Image (cartoon, rainbow over all chains, first blue to last red; front, side, top):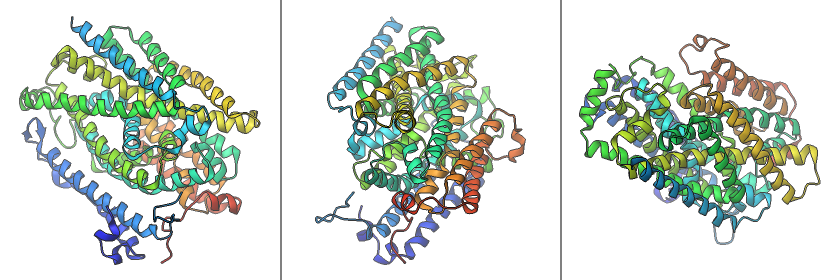
Length: 92
Length: 489
């Protein structure tokens, strides 16, 4: 996924990218801890799995999506300074 | 008959893995770069699967289920949270290390440490400390292998451990890193498939709700968020998740995998794909563990929960495949760890201190010899069984987390020094080991996981001592570190 295309240039440009990245990491931490305070008590079983676990799975999927965005922002923000070859690919 | 069919399926699987190794050996060049990191040519899917395979181990297949059968589903919760954070480590530190490894021709983590801090001593300390945790990790795998062979083939535990160790040694000797990662890719796929099939079978062919209700009757509170013993408090979950989030990306054998990526995009994508594969597998193991309480009586040794429940539920063919998948997971972790450890010893001790003129072929030969020594140590620990699979492997994982500061901070923080790295490598793991052995009482952690305490100490000491000491040579730092944001504001 090309984040430079997907997101406006301002998001992947510094210093905004730093704030976006830090904010996403903060949200991930809040979700990681916060779910513990809202899911308790949902112990009814559906297909042999407690309801809180079904909800936790949805939260984990959302966290993965956020992590993907954070990775994309970080990568796009750092790309300009990466050495590249003539065809535009990253050079190692 | 049951045993015969299951054993045939299992035997066929092992022969298949050996054939992969033999085939891979045709491409192995017996140069260090090829033997250790497959000439840095590994693509996205194979790298993701080999990352997954190294993490999906006896811990995943037997350990998680053993733990959830008594402690509830909090085990899955912390592992899933940690897996989300793995992706960020792989995408940032992993990419930076892959780039540095390629530029500086580095193939092992201890080699990176040695060059980054311009100090062979720090490299040796890193190797010694991680060696302790690697031995524990391999021992955990061998215990799992012993359990699997005991249940499947009725081979007593001790000979079963020796048999596992022997097979592993033969395989790595034949195949090298290329064979290990190829078989890892197959093994991850097999493991994912068989665990999904077993969980699907319980949900759709049996009445999983009835089974779960039977389990709750047997163990009250088993499906509660905090678990039956109220262990899974928010503090405990987040601290163990953080310890694992540093530990898994900080495995020396995972760091070696960063060096094998063919380009940065491969590293990023495979890190993400790894989490996508790992989280469902964690879930499958956790669910089978809690459901087992409603299916079979609690075995004397909880490490036997998963094999016994699978044997109880499924037909012999599927049982054989599941046990093959288990052995797959165990093998893939153990062979990766053993290969990384022996390659570090060969390059960073033998070549650095004992025989600087060693040829490339000599290095590979010494690696193969050291493999035998390392596996022998792990066999000794496995036979002692100092802890169950879950606790032994969890100890190794959080131990690796406490060794990660010189690598993760070293990549981005130019102020990091050899003295800081050495102090961190001694104090962080030292406190962790003392907490694990209960020499330091667990009550002193204030409800946090002991591994998290070790990580805080390791990173705190690294920063404090580095600030108090002079930086290493500028060129060593400059060549082996990156700015986290490499574009100027």
